[in-house]
Image (cartoon, rainbow over all chains, first blue to last red; front, top):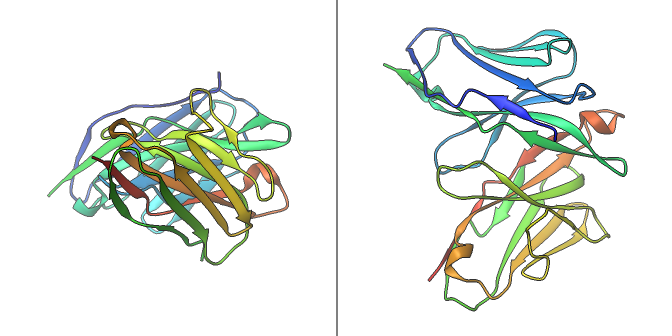
Amino acid sequence: QKEVEQNSGPLSVPEGAIASLNCTYSDRGSQSFFWYRQYSGKSPELIMFIYSNGDKEDGRFTAQLNKASQYVSLLIRDSQPSDSATYLCAVNTYSGAGSYQLTFGKGTKLSVIP
Amino acid sequence: GAVVSQHPSWVICKSGTSVKIECRSLDFQATTMFWYRQFPKQSLMLMATSNEGSKATYEQGVEKDKFLINHASLTLSTLTVTSAHPEDSSFYICSARRRTSGVLSTDTQYFGPGTRLTVL
């Protein structure tokens, strides 16, 4: 069973602080990793993807990948109340017959306190 | 880029009727489309995977005769909930996979805005 684990939270951070979201995955052969943001009652929205070990920065967001430790994280700098949402970690896993599908974690609920 | 639309955004129907939901990738051709369902405060649940021109692959426990999927083109997939009942009330979300490199394992999925179905 290929699994993606996230701390369900809620994770509360004050406005302006750094929010750190973590994710571990079980399939060592996974190649690509994604972070989605989902506001209550809305569909998931892609924030970032990362394929290579190390850091990838996009504005206030930084994704970090360590394949040896099977660990992915998302850092949100200068957190804003509008960042309050559930963050889904997703891993592209092989599902057989040449196909891949995303395996999602259960999500971490982030609350940014003004 | 990478916009996925869904129609309708919400629908209310009577028990026993059928409801069709459309999913379109507006600015790219989708290699594969996926249909998810999400109940309140629960995780996304994958229902089926759909490739253009072939039969959909359903996840275990999802009734293929109740949830009919047609993938007519590289930009359009439809989900029909047949003989809907109140327990089918949920948030249905489609997702389209876009080729981002020459490597299948790194393709990216983009989600539609979802369709909220209420069956009375």
